Image 1 (cartoon, one colour):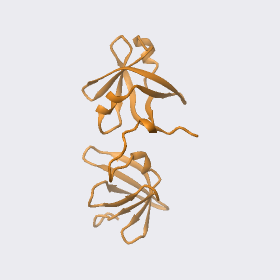
Image 2 (cartoon, one colour):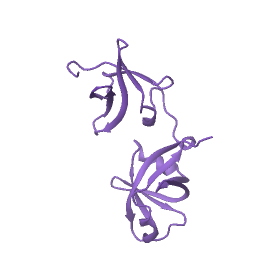
Image 3 (tube, one colour):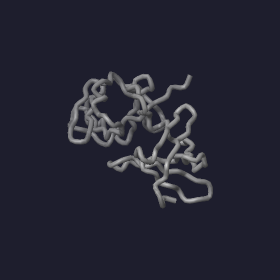
Image 4 (cartoon, helix red, strand yellow):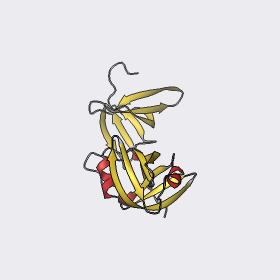
Length: 169
Protein backbone atom coordinates (compact mmCIF):
# COMPACT_ATOMS: atom_id res chain seq x y z
CA UNK A 1 0.00 0.00 0.00
CA UNK A 2 1.38 3.39 -1.03
CA UNK A 3 1.99 5.86 1.80
CA UNK A 4 0.24 9.20 1.30
CA UNK A 5 2.01 12.30 2.53
CA UNK A 6 0.91 15.84 3.33
CA UNK A 7 3.35 18.69 2.79
CA UNK A 8 3.47 20.86 5.93
CA UNK A 9 6.38 23.14 5.07
CA UNK A 10 9.61 23.89 3.26
CA UNK A 11 13.04 24.14 4.86
CA UNK A 12 14.33 27.55 3.86
CA UNK A 13 17.42 27.98 6.03
CA UNK A 14 19.27 27.03 9.17
CA UNK A 15 18.85 28.70 12.58
CA UNK A 16 21.94 29.04 14.76
CA UNK A 17 24.83 26.61 14.95
CA UNK A 18 23.25 23.60 16.71
CA UNK A 19 21.37 22.08 13.78
CA UNK A 20 18.03 23.87 13.98
CA UNK A 21 16.25 24.56 10.69
CA UNK A 22 13.75 27.21 9.59
CA UNK A 23 10.57 25.93 8.03
CA UNK A 24 8.18 28.10 6.04
CA UNK A 25 4.91 26.39 6.97
CA UNK A 26 2.29 25.54 4.35
CA UNK A 27 -0.49 24.76 6.85
CA UNK A 28 -3.16 27.02 8.33
CA UNK A 29 -2.34 26.34 11.97
CA UNK A 30 1.37 26.20 12.80
CA UNK A 31 0.60 25.02 16.33
CA UNK A 32 -0.01 21.57 14.87
CA UNK A 33 3.81 21.28 14.60
CA UNK A 34 3.94 20.99 18.41
CA UNK A 35 2.16 17.62 18.11
CA UNK A 36 4.74 16.07 15.78
CA UNK A 37 7.05 13.37 17.11
CA UNK A 38 8.52 12.63 13.67
CA UNK A 39 8.54 14.13 10.18
CA UNK A 40 9.42 12.97 6.71
CA UNK A 41 11.81 15.05 4.66
CA UNK A 42 11.88 14.86 0.90
CA UNK A 43 15.14 15.89 -0.68
CA UNK A 44 16.48 15.09 -4.11
CA UNK A 45 13.63 12.68 -4.83
CA UNK A 46 13.89 10.49 -1.73
CA UNK A 47 12.04 10.65 1.59
CA UNK A 48 13.66 10.04 4.97
CA UNK A 49 12.05 9.71 8.40
CA UNK A 50 13.38 11.89 11.25
CA UNK A 51 12.51 12.10 14.94
CA UNK A 52 11.65 15.58 16.20
CA UNK A 53 13.75 16.77 19.13
CA UNK A 54 12.19 20.21 19.44
CA UNK A 55 9.81 22.72 17.88
CA UNK A 56 9.60 26.46 18.51
CA UNK A 57 8.40 29.49 16.59
CA UNK A 58 10.17 32.66 15.41
CA UNK A 59 8.34 35.31 13.36
CA UNK A 60 6.59 33.46 10.52
CA UNK A 61 8.90 30.44 10.77
CA UNK A 62 8.69 27.11 12.53
CA UNK A 63 12.08 26.19 13.96
CA UNK A 64 12.68 22.46 14.08
CA UNK A 65 15.44 20.46 15.73
CA UNK A 66 15.77 16.89 14.49
CA UNK A 67 17.53 14.14 16.43
CA UNK A 68 20.97 13.48 15.00
CA UNK A 69 21.26 16.85 13.24
CA UNK A 70 23.55 18.70 15.65
CA UNK A 71 25.44 21.27 13.63
CA UNK A 72 24.79 24.01 11.08
CA UNK A 73 26.78 22.29 8.32
CA UNK A 74 24.60 19.18 8.43
CA UNK A 75 21.43 21.27 8.74
CA UNK A 76 22.42 23.25 5.61
CA UNK A 77 22.18 20.08 3.52
CA UNK A 78 18.40 20.15 4.16
CA UNK A 79 17.87 23.63 2.65
CA UNK A 80 15.24 23.47 -0.09
CA UNK A 81 13.78 20.21 1.22
CA UNK A 82 10.08 19.57 1.78
CA UNK A 83 8.73 18.63 5.22
CA UNK A 84 5.92 16.07 5.12
CA UNK A 85 3.76 14.01 7.43
CA UNK A 86 1.83 10.84 6.74
CA UNK A 87 -1.93 10.87 6.28
CA UNK A 88 -2.51 9.24 9.67
CA UNK A 89 -0.62 12.12 11.37
CA UNK A 90 -2.89 14.77 9.85
CA UNK A 91 -5.53 16.53 11.90
CA UNK A 92 -8.95 15.25 10.80
CA UNK A 93 -11.10 17.69 8.88
CA UNK A 94 -14.16 19.22 10.47
CA UNK A 95 -17.53 19.19 8.72
CA UNK A 96 -17.37 21.21 5.46
CA UNK A 97 -13.55 21.20 5.57
CA UNK A 98 -11.20 19.36 3.24
CA UNK A 99 -7.53 19.05 2.50
CA UNK A 100 -6.13 21.31 -0.22
CA UNK A 101 -4.55 18.31 -1.95
CA UNK A 102 -8.04 16.82 -2.49
CA UNK A 103 -9.05 19.79 -4.65
CA UNK A 104 -6.44 19.39 -7.39
CA UNK A 105 -7.88 17.92 -10.60
CA UNK A 106 -11.41 18.23 -9.20
CA UNK A 107 -14.13 18.78 -11.81
CA UNK A 108 -15.82 22.18 -11.49
CA UNK A 109 -19.41 22.67 -12.61
CA UNK A 110 -21.67 25.70 -12.55
CA UNK A 111 -24.89 25.57 -10.54
CA UNK A 112 -26.87 24.75 -13.71
CA UNK A 113 -24.69 21.64 -14.15
CA UNK A 114 -22.58 22.88 -17.07
CA UNK A 115 -18.97 21.80 -16.84
CA UNK A 116 -16.46 24.62 -16.40
CA UNK A 117 -13.15 22.71 -16.16
CA UNK A 118 -10.84 21.28 -13.50
CA UNK A 119 -8.89 22.84 -10.66
CA UNK A 120 -5.33 23.02 -11.94
CA UNK A 121 -3.81 25.26 -9.30
CA UNK A 122 -4.61 27.11 -6.10
CA UNK A 123 -3.31 30.58 -5.36
CA UNK A 124 -2.85 31.55 -1.72
CA UNK A 125 -3.43 35.31 -1.64
CA UNK A 126 -3.80 36.00 2.07
CA UNK A 127 -7.39 37.29 1.90
CA UNK A 128 -8.81 34.10 0.43
CA UNK A 129 -7.57 31.30 -1.79
CA UNK A 130 -8.22 31.49 -5.52
CA UNK A 131 -8.91 28.38 -7.58
CA UNK A 132 -7.40 28.31 -11.07
CA UNK A 133 -9.85 26.47 -13.33
CA UNK A 134 -8.23 24.96 -16.42
CA UNK A 135 -10.57 24.89 -19.44
CA UNK A 136 -10.05 23.02 -22.68
CA UNK A 137 -9.11 25.42 -25.46
CA UNK A 138 -10.02 28.51 -23.42
CA UNK A 139 -8.41 30.85 -20.93
CA UNK A 140 -8.18 29.79 -17.29
CA UNK A 141 -10.84 31.11 -14.93
CA UNK A 142 -9.91 32.40 -11.47
CA UNK A 143 -12.59 31.77 -8.85
CA UNK A 144 -12.28 33.17 -5.33
CA UNK A 145 -12.72 30.53 -2.62
CA UNK A 146 -15.56 32.32 -0.85
CA UNK A 147 -18.99 31.07 0.21
CA UNK A 148 -20.77 33.22 -2.38
CA UNK A 149 -18.92 31.39 -5.18
CA UNK A 150 -18.29 27.88 -3.85
CA UNK A 151 -21.69 26.25 -3.39
CA UNK A 152 -20.66 22.65 -2.77
CA UNK A 153 -17.51 20.54 -2.60
CA UNK A 154 -18.08 16.82 -3.07
CA UNK A 155 -14.72 15.25 -2.19
CA UNK A 156 -15.92 11.68 -2.72
CA UNK A 157 -17.05 12.31 -6.32
CA UNK A 158 -14.41 15.03 -6.98
CA UNK A 159 -16.96 17.67 -8.07
CA UNK A 160 -17.14 21.30 -7.02
CA UNK A 161 -20.28 23.30 -7.77
CA UNK A 162 -19.77 27.05 -8.19
CA UNK A 163 -21.72 30.24 -8.77
CA UNK A 164 -19.66 32.60 -10.90
CA UNK A 165 -19.74 36.29 -10.07
CA UNK A 166 -21.42 38.32 -12.81
CA UNK A 167 -19.00 39.25 -15.58
CA UNK A 168 -16.28 36.73 -14.56
CA UNK A 169 -16.40 34.93 -17.89
